[in-house]
Length: 266
Image (cartoon, rainbow, N blue to C red; front, side, top):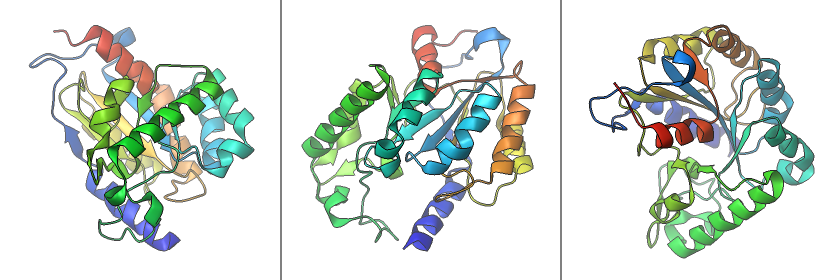
């Protein structure tokens, strides 16, 4: 089962490596980022994985780079290592909402790993709305924040009764994977199994364009599932830290709050 999950997400990551968000914040205008940076970059880490605490977080702290951690709150690490997640928030990292149970659509290909009781195909919008609200409540108890962003597990949005993300979107500053307010030409890059640091850097460079936002998504870093090697992750961080005049690297919450408050300008 673990091999099937890894293969599914690996194929998803390949497919998404060049998915462009085409909806502009304001048509025909270019976003201006803080401190004259050309490009904004959000580094995010899904599922509340142990290797994120063990490897990704120390590396981010070493380079003074802030990341967004989308916590699946039922994951054992949240209960067992709660103080470490709280310390991450206190250090300026974002704790984002990734639901409590990570429900996805079981009806899609190679989704046998989705537990029947978590299958979005048989759950209701009201059920998911209640789960997302409770996840926000738990996250507030961890970090004391009210403003938050959301990443739908598997990027699935449909339940048996309709689109639950439409229902919860007003609760958040932004929903990752959607393009509302995203500057024109922005790209979603998925850091995944098998990519070297040089390859990650190349993808950043080839998609860099004045005013865009690059979303780079990781899961495991040196462990767990869909793991990027610590060496590749470290090489990317070193590159970004050495090029801060070009890249504004911040949490997705901070970036999208800036977009909301500033819009685009010529």
